[in-house]
Length: 239
Image (cartoon, rainbow, N blue to C red):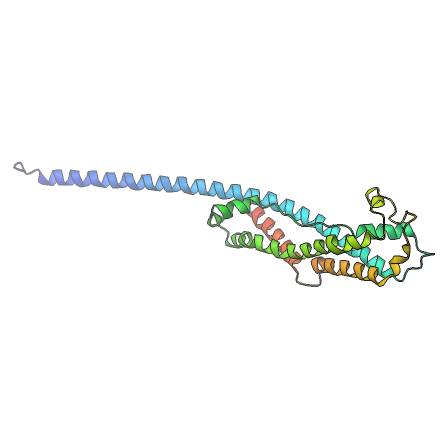
């Protein structure tokens, strides 16, 4: 100070402080860039897994729906035959129609990636807001859809099968043979009101699942799957 160097030292000290601050800011920026890169990589991995899972879900839903449709179609064929002329009816065809009403398929989608996002509270990692909302609502949508399948399946096992096993041969069914090929079977039961009601109610429960005339859960599930596939395909392209 005696040599009048105060200004020089002050400038030097300020310069040191500025350099330190610049270094800190650069370090923070690099850290932010690195964190952002890591987050984008994680999001891309999630998106890729979601895309693959929903391609499988789409295929599984198509398979499930096809079996529901077979039940509905063959139940309709039986009802259209009633009352049945037992002397003229082709019993092999009738046996096939009844066998086709035994299908009980349920939609059990792959959603391990969604479960992972849920369990780790990581949905904010999905930057596309529409996709994030679809994924967050997926589980509830599937549960709503499954309710109709569960009702139909419960009727099959609790009422439909117990009724039919009094009148047909389930051994023949497991052997892929005509249900009526047994000397103890009286085929006349197919003209009973109880048989008509059993088939009609079986068809009605399936109608609740697949009928395209209504804004039912199947339509909403299918729309959601297709949109998620579309959004994740776009995201993959943008990577």
